[in-house]
Length: 85
Image (cartoon, helix red, strand yellow):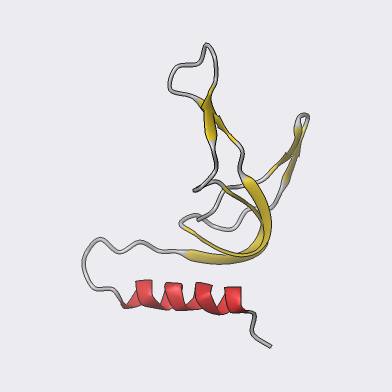
């Protein structure tokens, strides 16, 4: 059975492929855990000009992005999760 989110991602990808023009961008659909940062509230970091900290929502499912799919990475500070559109 097709999931609605998957169908939406595939429709968006198909629409982008059908666009004409020289400035086409390749998008990749992934099914993974990702950080949704496009609507996240951000706060300036004191002492670091032009740097902010954002409270991104972590989601699992299908996402569309301009970079290849990335797995979670364990760091000394916790898991690092890539942000996607």
